[in-house]
Image (cartoon, rainbow, N blue to C red; front, side, top):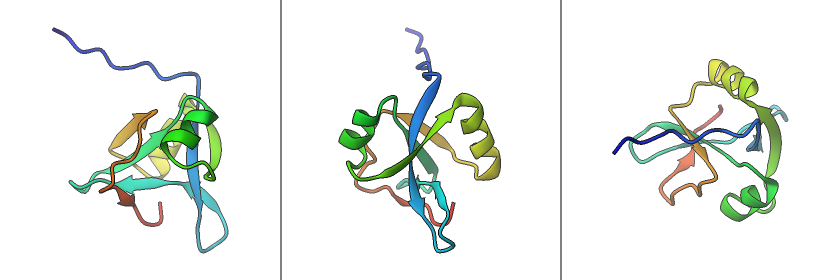
Length: 93
């Protein structure tokens, strides 16, 4: 059986965090095996249900995701998934 990669929608909602310099940055998480993960959502209700109902967010295209990866590389990109309890903020990304 072959596995196919899920297709990303044209735009996704990514949670953000405010940093010490008052800028909003993508909320990245470090997994139990030390990889950096970015969680994105295909709709706002999924972001609220799976991530946090009061999270700030930014709308990103696939090109925006690539640009974000170039500025602050991440190892994993999860679509419509809940961060595991062991995932912790990945610092100042």
